[in-house]
Length: 300
Image (tube, rainbow, N blue to C red):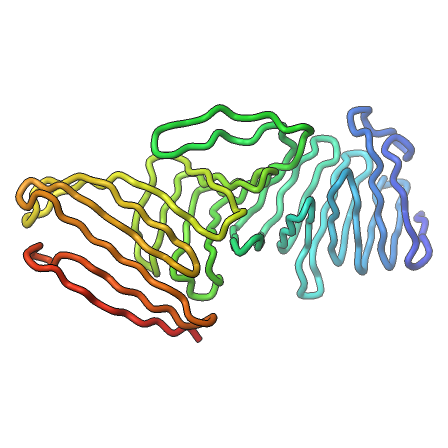
C-alpha cells in the first residue's frame, strides 16, 4: 500500500505529524519538493525522484533521488543522472555523489565532495557537517587566541582526506592536503595535519593545525626551518610564503653553522589567465654566488 502525490506537488513533513511522531528536539519543518513523491505508510518512508529539493532550517539539499525514513529521521540523497548532489547554506555550495543526513542529530556526510568559494577550491573523499556554536581559535605559529561564540548555531563542514587550493583544480601550482579540512560559518578553514605541495613536490608539513580565512584569495604562512647538509652544517631559520594567485612570493632566511646567514627570495606575477612569470634570487648550491633565474609558465 502506498500513496502517490501528484506531479510537482509540495510535500510538507511536519516533524511530529507523521504516522510515528518524531522527537520533540527536532522542532522545525522539512519541506520536500520533487517531480514524483511517494509515501509508503507501512514502511514510514518517503521516496522523491526528479529534481528533488529539501528545505530544512536554513539550508537546502538538491538531488535526483531522495529517500526519507520518517521513524529514524534519516535522509539519503543521490545523483543518478550524472549530476551532483548539492547542499547550500549562507553562500556555501557543496557538491557530491551521495548524501546522508539525520534530522534528529542535525548532522550528516557527503561522499565525493567538492566546493568552490571566493576562489578557494576544495575536494575530498567525504564531507561531514553538523551544528556548532563556536568557531576555532586562530593560530599563528605557536600562539593561539580564544574561540568565539557565534550569535546562533551554524553548520561546520569537515572534509576527510581533503585538499584545497586557490588555483584551478586541473594542474594547480600549489595545493594543501590534510587528514581533515573544516569549513566554519565565519568562512574560515582549519586544516588538520596540513601538508603543502608546490607543483607535485611536498614543500612543508605543519606540526599543528592551521586556520585561515577564505575571504581573501591568498594563503600566507610563516614556518620554522631546521636541518643539516654537508655544505651548510646545521642550520635554522624561517620561511615566509604568500601563495597569491596573482603575485606569489616567498622569502627564506637561514643561519647556518658553516655559511652564517644565507637565504633565497622568489616571486612572480600573472599575465592574463594562463601566463605566469617567476623569478628566483638565490645562492648557488655551494652558497658562494648569487644567481638570478627566470621561469615562464604557460597553462593551457
